[in-house]
Image 1: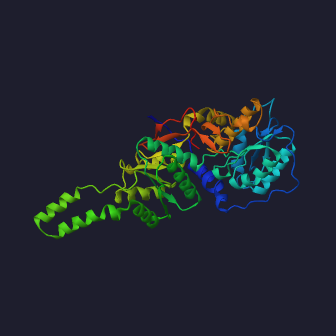
Image 2: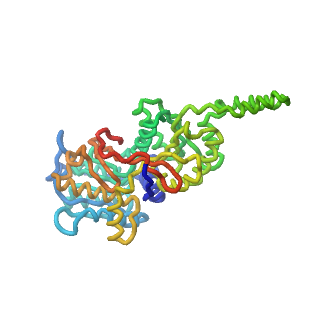
Image 3: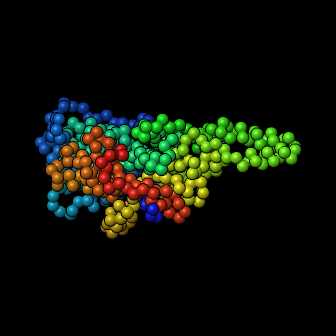
Length: 430
């Protein structure tokens, strides 16, 4: 195992996963209607039917919020994408502003398609992607949005953000390799938590295990305490032993005291699960769980703790809580992004935000595809995939994306790589 540093910003990943990308899943973000009109034939250069789908030529259309509340993110996306394109010659990057809205994204994509662009990278959010996808489909244009909302995946639409399904599948796979196959979860009662729950159910089914027990917690001391107590089933596991100890002490005899002492050394039976996924992504909630889990006798090594990619930015703090030492999470190997990080720093004078990697990978995939015959589904879904700043990426024909994520363990100082990112995805982890 090797010690690695974290390059993942908690704030930027929260912005992508909890605020922008998942907000539309429960209908919280407005969806603008797509402009109506007569059905159009696929433009010149596009292919359809039973074979390959998509354009064989044209420039690359980047949809980014260059104005509005997310303008700073949009500029970073554009900066990162430009690094994948040479200053002159060949395919060009056509950057268009969405304003961070679904309506703005539709207007931008219509303008780009009218200009002859052959593939779309972006937009940023799930709501924008849902609005743009019908326009792109009608024009026969494939797209690589930046959202991590896997529900927008469809043939011709490959969301490149690291989805709950990807991170959960990888870390559950690692836990199973260590013999921890009986899953349970403590998750926040919000969009992100419910997406994690769906991913955990799918991962358990893939392992041939029963559906995991899932408890949703409310924020705050009382809510976390109640959830941990409920999932621990301590009343059934440990209360009987506690009652026996109390009864022995109340005898008031030497024999009673001796019996109580002997009983106090007996271990509480383990819980019904041996792998617990904890969806908390803030230090305060994790600190509360670090107190309650041992109190209700949910401890390693009987139980392997698992968590989301967002733990990358929290691992050093988590290491101060002994109970979390050895907890696992899946994330890209920071070594994969070293060249991109250095290039971005040298060109723009600042380190890239984490989401910039996604834009660079999308631009690089489009650039490579242009040189391999065009932006068709046949080229984009090459089973060998693409090596990007976040590691290996494979675009599947159904729109899902497989990623080569590494697995890390919380350890004193810095997290330790528990399992390297795979070099191939012949058996994809979506």
